Amino acid sequence: MPSKRIRFGTSGWRAILADEFTFDNVRLAVAAIAGHVKARSRNPALIVGHDTRFLSEEFAQTAAGVLAAHHVRPLLCDGAAPTPTIAYEILRRKTDGAINFTASHNPADYHGLKFSGADGAPALPEVTREIEERFAQLAAAGRPVPEASHADFERIAPRQPYLERLSELVDLDAIRRAGLRVVCDPLHGAGSGYLDRILAEAGVAVTAIRTERDVLFDGLVRTNEKVYDLLVLGKSLQQTILGDTKSFPLRYIDWNPDTWLTSNVFHVTEEYEVERSGSHELRTPDLVLFVNGIPLGVIECKRPDLKDAIEQAVSQMIRNQRDDEIPKLFLYAQLLVAVSKNEARYATTGTAAKFWAVWKEDVDAELAPLVNQPLSKPQKDRLFGHRFQYVRRYFDALEQGERSVQLLRQHHPCKAVGQGHGREGKEQVRFPLEVRVQSVGTADHKGDVAPAAQTAGQEAGETPSVQRLAPFVQHYPHAPTG
Image (cartoon, rainbow, N blue to C red; front, side):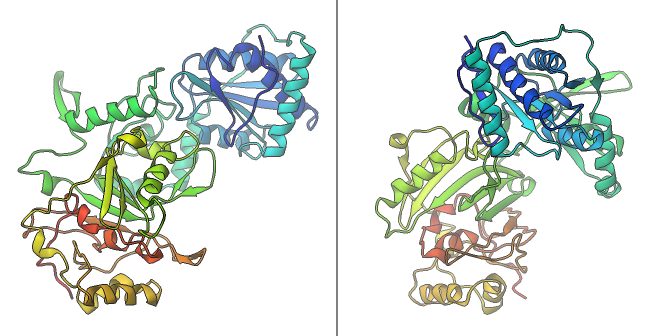
């Protein structure tokens, strides 16, 4: 039985398959969209696209039939296509928009429908509200939705024009000359055959994995577990040379105790900005810890004067994992930490608040001498040069009181990703820090290094115990200061 109403969120209508997201409701939704575009165009045409989820092609075919029956010309994509590709095709063909069947990052039991306008962007709220009202009227009428027979609808191939346009915008020759060896992982999704293909055609050494369709995306926790297995165990890939096929292990992280410090690259970002699902609104986790570009750790810091500061940090971390927040960050994160001054708790993705464990600090004897080691004036000039003066005065006062913690010495000028800007009276500056570490006491640093762990949050008066980052980043005491 069709629903009486549906609701469009920030990125379309999403619902559970065979519950709200049914063929009957899809027919009503598409008929409502057809009514909307017919009211604005004499000879409307809509692109119909889909992702690789269960029943995606069937929903797209049904939508094409409903559009045709309502005298809207359907242009059916010849295969799964990413949303940006469909958006470009709208502009290239000058159509009235597109219907795209996708539920983005949601679990396998979900599906969804996005409607984009003639500008290629998601429909505005006033448009989706009108479509919702049209849906309600059609559902209340109780009449069958007209649908053309599944004839051979006009099909389009949007991939090649999109890749050709990308090649005009991106300096592929520079990527090829860099001599990179790239592994492309589209996660069984609609992006398969895009990045890997354009790089291969440009002469870049690229290997694509998980390009096959997998309709059973298992949701945040199970996918996180699969990512954990890949990170720990790696993946075996076959390569055939002159008829001889061999399997080679691909490891995303080198866990070998003899080589992991020289083979992996570590980054720390402060105030890392992540767009919410289907929105341009940003969330900014205080610290994100990367290994080889993979966000393995997320740290949330809270001021100690807040009521239930640790609970607030844990609650915020759990909130950010919701479907309408920034769940994609947590598909990869394997360690979540909530800190407030000398208190900390930790967990993994999907852990309920009551199961977050207390972090017990155990400083390695080799790291202990580094605690409270002061920075030189040139180092401070580079670290605090782009920040408000009160920030430097605050850390100078901490240092004089022997309360500071420095785990890293900055030995190159820090390059800021974003410019500092006032936000509710607080400075919000973020910058990447790259550290290539060999061992405690002897290291081979590359890139810009700064005590970001200490500064994150403290500009706003927060005082997290940076000492807890010792297991993640290690110190190079002989780095040049000039």
